[in-house]
Image 1 (cartoon, one colour):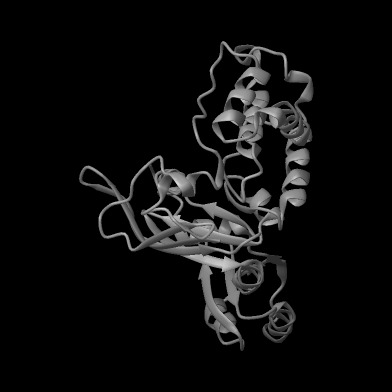
Image 2 (image 1 turned 45 degrees about the vertical axis):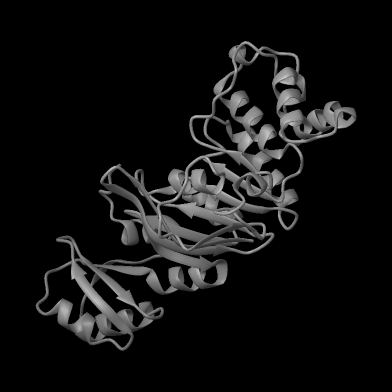
Length: 308
């Protein structure tokens, strides 16, 4: 379990996080989303004790440990793959991971077997003797993920974990998350929203340092079902089309984009639009349902032009 209550973090006069609160249930896979500059990486760095929160933050706990009072103990419960991962290029993979395992408290007699375990988990066993500087970006990302898994921490914080991976490696990563699901509490930050939609149990979305969505899969799926739109185009010009469409029961909004109309409704009203077209002698050139996606919800809540 991760609990965050009124977390703030500033850089000089700029407030990167503005009193955000959210929870990540034990054993869940939570997608942590937001545009560049929203505060995602800052939040993850606070959860790893790399950064201290501002005074006034009420509570931050990781696996039941108060991070504000026991940061060293809390960070030992966390495995992290963060943005701009620093790797010592002159070391071999096995040397780096062995050193990291010892730093994480893995007993000396188990270091080698633990390194072999995590390399197998990320499908990188064949790279164990290679010098890190000779590795591709995809391999370096997998070594960073292996580092996060060392010591089998109960909490995993993964920032853009599939950056640089090819489609086969991304598929293997999804399989890894499925194996870890339930045994670890996972926070996954990614701009690949289709990936988040596939593998996450929850979504926490932030924008401009504030939480704008924090829902489980059932809630956000219901939100997407009700947020879909219907596109209507007519072969000929007719008066009062917008007014007629707005009169249909269940329709929330009708807006024109020049070529046609976009209808938002609380339920599927395609058949009612068809009935109306027959009554009004409209010739429909297009009647199409456009289901909402996590991407469209993201743009709606955060704005398409959010900048870092």
